[in-house]
Length: 511
Image (cartoon, rainbow, N blue to C red; front, side, top):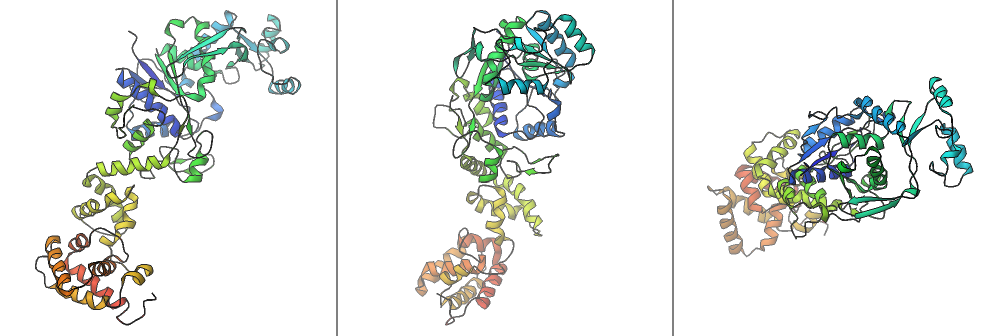
């Protein structure tokens, strides 16, 4: 049986779109499930679109996500080079083969000449019906062609597609896709200007020579599949033609159409794995990593965009995804990019991680605010608060009061929670707490609850005023969790400051 070999082959033209990440993920899952290889190839035949730094960015993105390649650019392997710009001589051999066998031809039409024809001929496409009226090696003599080439005239090589054929694409997701060759144009395979092939030729030659068994790619490439089938046939490689699988598009969270960066900018979510600094425009685009997503959450989220395991399970480790993945269960229809679901996944992974791991991520934020605190105490805060946030970056705004006493008190909470008798009651509470030798959570709770019952106070009023004094607002975990963490000295200091600064009994609290 033929060894499973798949490839992910991005172009270094900018940041890696999250749709490309999903394509790479599905290739990874398919390769691992079948004991095969995942090849990383760089398709840089269009030199005009090359962006410095893009290749390194793509590699770093997969390193962060935990998607490992078996061979390719920066990974090595026996089928290199894996960067298409380094394979010029290889491609030229196959261009010459098609020309010599009459399966391709040289065309000299300039962009201006092509535009003139488009204006004259409605819905013009360069094909069997129109190639006879153009300037190419099918209408010119060999002497004329040789002379133009000798003069240094730029040309392209076009694939000669014969009309009247039914081209079958055996797709693992969509079944047998049939296209009539009449609707295909004679695609450009090679340009003399930079001596490089176009995507169509380079892609086929590389897949063949690198023994790629399956091509798993986005739905946007489906229109190219019939051409690739015809090219395999032209080279006589039908027996080694890979199986195709065209993945559903990622769609906008709202409305219609393909997910774009503009959607992320508009709705406030990233569409790139890492932050991207565009070297041409200087524009900085947000990334999932910088926004605080865990790589495992991104992987889990993406895996379920267009693929359904057929069960109720939603949380999958990478190993579990490898075991469960079935490419035939991918949807044909586009998958809506529900970024809120992505946030939900991140929250779930926050809960799955240990307090120590989250504390290590939170500690630099704490230290950045000039707080010198032990990892043990930071971990205690994380234990109390991590279930309330979706991202580590959200922790500080919710729990800074553990490390820094409030400098002001929320006006709305003061009006609602600081009653006329609050100063007197809080003074009593401070005296009660000061008398405690055991300031543990359990002892505080036992003593304070008994005192509240004995005095006939409303528990809610006492706890709300206590919270306002220690936190500055009406939010947070259990009050005795807070006071036990702060300790006796700091709890009393905050209580007495609130008694001094907040309205005294009889003063108006603007209710």
